[in-house]
Structures are given as C-alpha cells and as structure tokens.
Amino acid sequence: MADMDTRRAMRLKRKKRIRKHLSGTTERPRLSVFRSSKHIYAQVIDDTKGQTIISASTVEKQVRQGENPENKIAAAAEIGKQVAKRAMDKGIVSVVFDRNGYKYHGRVKALSDSARETGLDF
Image (cartoon, rainbow, N blue to C red):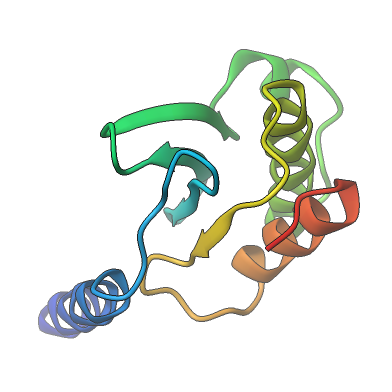
C-alpha cells in the first residue's frame, strides 16, 4: 500500500506543478481529465468563474446503456467525442488540456485525440 500512496503523491505533485501554468478562461476553458481504475471523467471548466460548463463520464446512464466498448481505451475515446460535441453545442471551440498529472498515454491520450478529431482545438 505504501507504493500506491507514493504514486498518488507523485501524481498530485505533478498536478500542482502543471496547474501553476494552466488556467481556463471564458474564451478558452480548461478540459480536465480524471481517471480511476474503472472509469474516466472529463470536465470543461471556466476557472475565472469557478464553474464546470460541461462534463461527461463513463458513469453516466446514457453511456452505460449504450454500446458497451470492448475496453477502457475505447470508452475513453467515446467520452472524448461526447465532451467535444457538448462543447461545440455550447459554442466552445478551443480549450486548454489539463491531463491532471497523468501521463499523456493510454486512456488520457485516447480521450484527447477523439476530442480533437470531433472538432475541439487544443
């Protein structure tokens, strides 16, 4: 368990270091990603107002009742598409990507790539 605590502490340290230089505005909000062992969550946040504008996750009822993706990477790609579509509907075209201390690899990369393909500009 000590190893898990160390990994979590290191991720939080990276997160803090990244967030010093990263902030979302009304014109260009922040796309924040959180991944747990089972699910992935994405939020578009306006840091000037302190509000979450859009969110999507694999926990949502629509996602769970729809097609079941074959793996977690495919599920993350689907969440990226959903978040991009919802952002486009709200008139948000450009965002700042916040990987939240996670490596840009696997599920985090799949989410961001599918959001870019759907039309969000990073």
